[in-house]
Image (cartoon, rainbow, N blue to C red; front, side):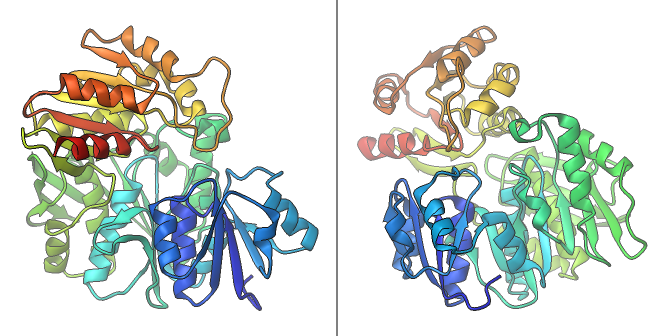
Length: 459
């Protein structure tokens, strides 16, 4: 695929997955260019490393290019894709390129509806500190490396998969982690059954002598487990909380920004461990990372240090800043109802009053999970809703942030508001926020900008 290739162009380079691939290829010595509708912090970092970045898409951007990479949201009539076809420049999807880059490595691939980014980051941190020098592809910016990807040695790769477009089926893991499974991306799969079928198919990609690591407490993954059969050379390791899994967390204690629990690994009591992350969902994420580390021979003391000193991931329950009056701003990427509920539970341990600013992500998700979104904000004392962030999707008639607002209002007695513009949200926060509030911006779009602006004005 890359034989004879020197110059590679990315259409949609500003995305988290595309930018991560571009960064690793830059580190490998390729000439990288890319285009996107607008520049962002990821493209600016790539530009600083030597990539050529274009704002907007134009056929002239393909001069001297040997290979074109495109993401799944790029339409067929994109002028750069059309130009590649006219010039007979090979064009492949992001998922195929990722599969190619890790095909010969012992890859640890993390898949699932929730927890992928944090689990991938924890695994990356553990292996990095253990001297295994993995190549990393993460769906968020790991603070430890200041990036969402990094080129490592020849042997290992840690990869966050993407099931949203089925591209995780291009990956051939040596260790496969399934964090959990729930209705999502049904615009692509069409039904829950087809989503489950895709994950069953993914387990068939596990390499010989590979390890399948599964959250035993997850209901849909239990369906997956009933319908797979591993090769005799492969092994299954399960994890859970207070369960009969192989790796278990007992006596869990959740604090404001940390969690701790006693670990039992395959029947053997180890000791109490502290994780520099809050929330029950992060207990699951850290259990998965512990299981990966132990299955790869990483020492228990190294794992403990990695988890207790973990520096976090941008946009994953990230403390952004605090005003002089003690108003704390935290930002989180949660965009599914279950994730939102878990984030709010964690937030309740920090401050008595929570003001939530939620930006829905994608029309299709809002439509398909509307009833679940209506019931997931119970722990928000004040809820501000805004317009849907489309993430490249075309609009769906009748589906809007206002629709979600009306649905949520029918299930909430607490104050709930709808604002169509960031300036309106900021005006509300300026007038209504109180000393020691927690302002929590939630969503996979650009809602984090509201928190940043509020802090900039307040300090």
